[in-house]
Figure 1 (cartoon, rainbow, N blue to C red):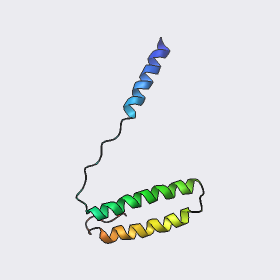
Figure 2 (figure 1 turned 180 degrees about the vertical axis):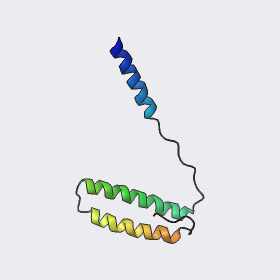
Figure 3 (figure 1 turned 120 degrees about the horizontal axis):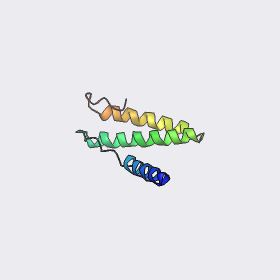
Figure 4 (figure 1 turned 90 degrees about the vertical axis):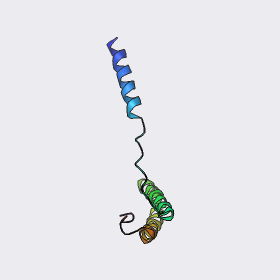
Length: 84
């Protein structure tokens, strides 16, 4: 009976821990800057994945990400600081 209690407690803990985190409140951001920020995030994730797989395409992705960061910094107001 003790084993069943442990399994039920572990299952309940896992179910509670698996709940999604609440989203951060959206800041007032220019729609164009938001799109560039999304692209920077996606390129960052792609680059990390390519690094893990030792994919030679990661160099190209890194350059594309750098260019997208430059675009984001260009369209972002000075008080928002861009991607860095």
